[in-house]
Length: 431
Ligand SMILES: NC(=O)c1ccc[n+]([C@@H]2O[C@H](COP(=O)([O-])OP(=O)(O)OC[C@H]3O[C@@H](n4cnc5c(N)ncnc54)[C@H](O)[C@@H]3O)[C@@H](O)[C@H]2O)c1
Image: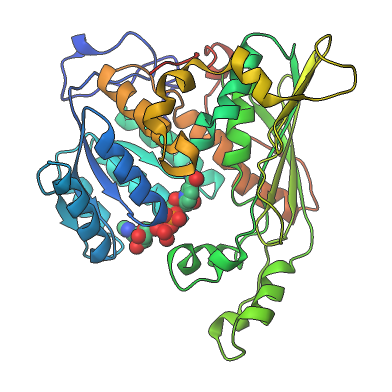
């Protein structure tokens, strides 16, 4: 196992050492980021569209098990005035050939969960930086695998957690940095989204996401809720996750949906789901602070990521967005978050909002792609790194372990190997 690389730097053997940025976890700058995109379905298509609008990058290779998706991407890329990319469509392992054959700086994937780690490992082994859709990994072992590969090959390995870049999440991070909430003591986040019809569809996520509910019982999708609040608690940058306890309730939602919507003779009706409809996990940090992370995707309900951050001077609460700061406004009454935007909007949102308009998930997907390309081009550390990818994704594997052990406490590994004690907080980044 390589020594903790948090205090070191990621170097690229192809570039002279003199160009390596002075900051930790940075790679040499590059004028143009050459990208291989793997998995061009619902989410991947949005990233392809974004990347075509971002200066300084080119998608030169595309890969999907469905040739119609690489054809679609090829059309978008050539219509934007770029050369035709090489298409890789020879089955579910063809990403290996892409990683071995192509001259690329970055392999970015939006594939089903089971392919994230194999694709990232193949990319880094072949000298490419890599970025993945969420979660990075579905087991603690795989979280270690990406950390060790990033350290060994000295490559960026990023979890593209778009919710870190949403407008309210960035505003709250700015509020925390400015001290408006005082010392942050507690946070709550989650992914509460009725996905029943999507999980039973004969296309898109219906082809792979429901299967995970037959295999694992825990929090299978923690990163949207946890990523942003982890930033507010300086996780991996002054504090880190210590241990977790997790509880899942009964599994009813998918069974009930199938009974109502799926023909009796369909193979789907034979499936046995083990995933509890509501999973609640509690994390304690090394500094003794607490985080609740919830997962609920099989029951009827409006969308929420909870998004609550509480400190010694007040709190922010999402869905709907509101805040309470002692000494401001009326006692015992929430302030609408729209009023706070005027005062504490994150500067990045002010600068980039017009460009992000119309992009996926309210613009945050464009902003995360923009920041990734900018950091790679400038050779600065990326906003988030492989240790963040491992820590927030580890909740999947650890919650499954805890649920299986009657909610026993399970410890987070220290993926940073002590680096969390000295790492600086995520900066207030700009365009
Ligand atoms: N960040 C977000 O807000 C967000 C939203 C939706 C999905 N996602 C994530 O994006 C990923 C993809 O989800 P989706 O909704 O786009 O699913 P999808 O099923 O619509 O797309 C997956 C694509 O990957 C292709 N694919 C499958 N196996 C492959 C392989 N071995 N090699 C190459 N291509 C392969 C499929 O043909 C499909 O085009 C998942 O990790 C999901 O969690 C994130």
